[in-house]
Image (tube, rainbow, N blue to C red; front, side, top):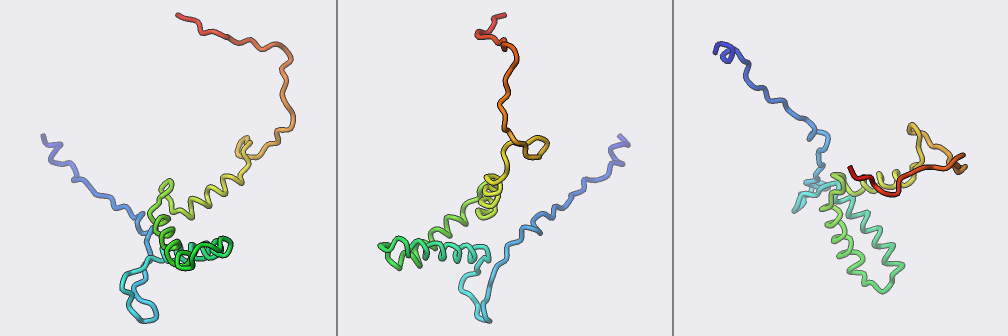
Length: 134
């Protein structure tokens, strides 16, 4: 009974991981207050999508300019910002996938090996064709 009275109270340990994943938000530009706060990542994604759709709009000339410079960049930005692929932002996911595709696939101890010759067995290989029942 006396041991329970001398126990120390529970201690809450703070987690500071949110500090490093802080979103930057723009509230004013050139001293003029924006009607809606703008996330820097969303603005960057919008301009990347705008450049992409401008290039595609030059190739596919039949798409109207209103769609190329307004609707399509806005819609693609909205879709990209809503996605979380493997818990990452879309551009970080794309970079990790590109690095994965470029990485050598045949590794031994995390070093690339050359698979040039085919291995041949010197004798017959024995194996079962049916499973034995116990």
